[in-house]
Amino acid sequence: MYSIMGVTGQVGAAVANALLAAGEPVRAVVRDAGKGVAWAAQGCEVAVADANDVQSLTGAFSHSKGVFILLPPNFDPVEGFAPTRQIIANIHQALAVTRPEKVVCISTIGAQASQPNLLNQLQLLEQSLRELDLPVTFLRPAWFMENHQWDIDAARSGVIPSFLQPLDKPVPMIATLDVGRTAAELLRETWQGNRIVELQATETVTPDSIAQTFAELLGHPVRMQVVARDTWQALFESQGMHNPLPRMQMLDGFNEGWICFEGVPRVGRVTFKDVLAGLLNG
Image (tube, rainbow, N blue to C red; front, side, top):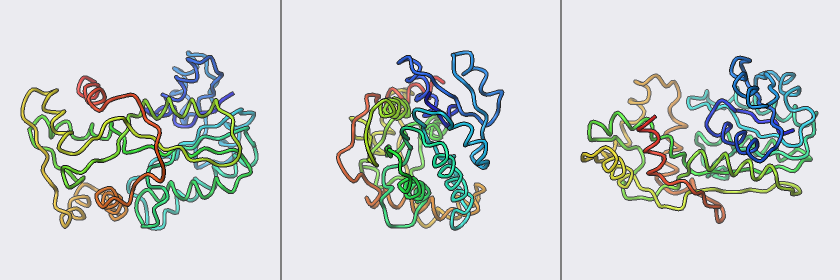
């Protein structure tokens, strides 16, 4: 039995679907029983668990051949990441008690960076799970292509504000479908100790090429417009963020190049144009 966190999201769903397609037994871990109905209809066992409740997590991970770990995202964290640290402690304890044969954990490109930034939350997760006497794979994907769903309205107007800059600088990206499929493949492998697997797409993507792809799909000119760094904090706060600094530091990391891969990443199959076309037609 493979226990999969986050099956209601794009990555978790892709993991579960890939395992089901391979004929593997899947336990779908959901926070709401109602969201498990569709997975039960596909033959999954369903476990209701909350990352803030170590007892329910322990039940969800019990008797598992492998567990897929996905940290609930928090884009506006409190200083010091206290709630995230508690969730990480809960996951650690549940895995320590249940001792699955292996664990695949979604981490991120740049998890090794020493500079403070939003992705340090996943660095903390890696550090915690490394203390377990279990085989753990940390899958470090690039920037999700699907993040550009938030650019669609701007693209329709012809100008997309870009926090990724300069506009001709390549940014490693990956489709969530490739992330999920890779995680499912890793879960079915056998290894010892800890290992890192990095993942990106075959193509090079820049903010300018993103605008060009939008233009091709929408049939009208689209361009990127740099959002000045000194305006970010006020802008993010106006959008309701309480602590925008970690997000700003993460963007700095991509723009300055210190959020990067450590080694040679594996390569996905899905193109940026395919992802964008799907988002526009969705």
